[in-house]
Image 1 (cartoon, one colour):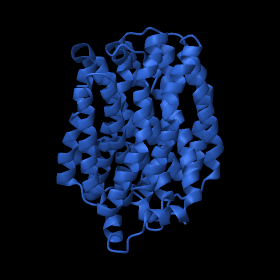
Image 2: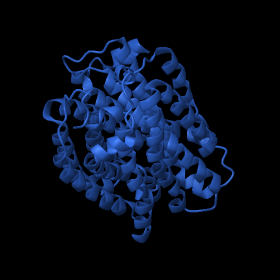
Image 3: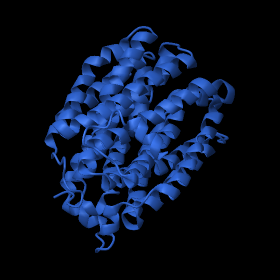
Image 4: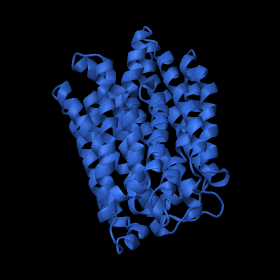
Amino acid sequence: MERIFNRLIAPIVPAGVTFNREQTHAVIASYLGWTLDAFDFFLLVFVMKDVAKEFDTDVKTVAWAVTLTLALRPVGAFIFGRAADRFGRRPVLIIDVLLFSLIGFSTGFSPDLTVFLVLRALFGIAMGGEWGVGSSLAMETIAPNARGFVSGLLQSGYPTGYLFASVVFGLLYPMIGWRGMFFVGVLPALLVLYIRRSVSESPHWQAASQGPRVSILSVLRANWQLAVYAAILMTAFNFLSHGTQDLYPTFLQVQHHFEHETVGVIAVIYNIGAILGGIACGVLSERYGRRRIMTITALLVIPIIPLWAFGSGPVLLATGAFLMQVMVQGAWGVIPAYLNELSPAAARATFPGFVYQLGNLIASSNAVIQATLAEQFGNNYGLALAIVVICAAAAIAGLAPLGREARGLSLGEGAR
């Protein structure tokens, strides 16, 4: 896997950035963990209409499953983050991957809507733990000049997971149905075998574990202003990403009446854009600064909205969706490096993941908000999506310049 990975990334690795064996395995594990976590999450967005029909309800009610998943993610970020700060990144990542895989698989057996919602809530706890633990493992292992590239690569795991879910939906859905989609979600458990065999513990954690323990309360007390700022920023970021992703397949199905094959193809196209945008902007942030790239990409979201939300026909909508995700995930490509550089060193597995997922909690109502707005506008999902995304993009453009630029900071220093 190491050889394959290095060959795949060779054309896009910036000059001067290199990875040794240990660093390569850490990046692969973190990237695949987030990819497969997102894969399990995004299986739901393709089948909400089918789940609603199965349980004799409407899409707005099923959208609560997305809300519950997002709302419980801060719980997982805190639990698994604290465990990783105490016991190490590697063992906690293994446990977390097993949990989200098994819970995702169990969703396919849901006998009714209540059980379905409970399982998606539990999935949210497991999903919430992966990002903070995985990103801290990668960022603490690589060289400082590689952070921008690896940040974009790690965050591109999210649309890569969405891409995999799109392919599964497009190819397998007619044969396996919505329940079978979740059964496929057990495959990420195989990642555990790779982590156990090949991934080493974070060198920063190994060094810090020899020193005195620091309570999370003291860390938060010393950095409460940073925590509040980061949580607000991540709220805007999560409204931007989920506002452009979660109900877009429903928008294509309900408002444009596209068949599942067309929806699947469009989803593949815009997720390719997301992957390219995340990696490219992560690299650019190493040269031009994290805050500047976040601000520019957020502003560029706004002129794309008319094509993305109000285009006619699959070609125009696919083009708009591609450009939209280049910018949305371009902004997100900076986040793993940015939050890890801002984080207090004693809580690096907890702080980035927790503020990220706290933003998810606040933004967890996005799917319900957009579904409700669409219903009020006569099933005009395009208008509902546009309203939320304009507000989120404007908020990021205003908030990003207010933060501290910590590019290149030694991760042993953390927040000051």
